[in-house]
Amino acid sequence: MRRIVFFAVMMCGLASGVISPVAAQADEISTAQDGKTKINLSGRQRMLSQRMAKAACFAAIGVKSEYHLQEARDAHRLFGATLHRLRHGDANLGMRVETTPRILMELDGVEELWRAYGTYVNRAAQDSDAADEMLSLIAALNLPVLRQMNRAVGAFEGHYGGSGEMHPALALTLNVAGRQRMLSQKAAKEFCMLLAVQDITMHRTALTKTIALFDSSLRALQEGNEALGLPPAPNDEIAAQLDRVDALWIPLRSVFEGMIAGDRPSAADIERVARDNIPLLKEMNEAVSMYAAL
Image 1 (cartoon, rainbow, N blue to C red):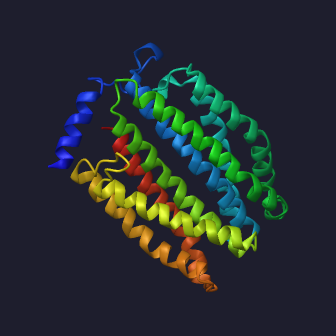
Image 2 (cartoon, rainbow, N blue to C red; image 1 turned 120 degrees about the horizontal axis):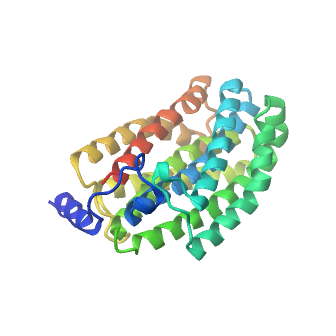
């Protein structure tokens, strides 16, 4: 019943007849569509900041180096292109030019950090030796980029969730669900940084917190969290999708927890993390897309 009520309330708060992003012209894009797309894609930027660092790390330690170098290159290109679209819009994606001063200020902060971080990632993506050389710089700068990008996501959520066309609960849900994509990559990155002997105490503590946040956020998305203002999964399809995420997360979490406890992961464990963080990311991204389609 709570799912049905939430779904009905959200739909009443959304503009009717949302324009398809493929066919939309800039002046036809609704505020709700613009906001959902920007919260989604700005949230994806958080993930890409961690995916680049994860890929560079695995390449540096010699785990499927060519695959991870290509992953770093692809994530680097997508981050840069999306950062441009968040500011300048893209009618084909259902995005207007952004004019909100607070959002533009936060994007300015991201762009300032990106100039250095993007350079380091680009160098690291050339070959595994370069990745090894750049790894300490990437390890130092990826979190400032993530934190600043998170401030930008919060600005998008606050502005568009308060627009009157998008229910605030949907804006919050898109933010939290989108954050799960980032956490899937952050956990794998922290696991790899521990293998690379990059600030072991810091990354062990960070991995512990990442696991806890992924767990609590997934439960909140599934069951709701009144204290956060987060409703439960609004329909059976999204509930089933979140269950698929959970099923992929559980074995990875087990490997992460062993690493935190001081166990040396086996070759199979390292391969599992390097391989299975991507299916986890894809399934969580599908859940975000389902929320964005509400």
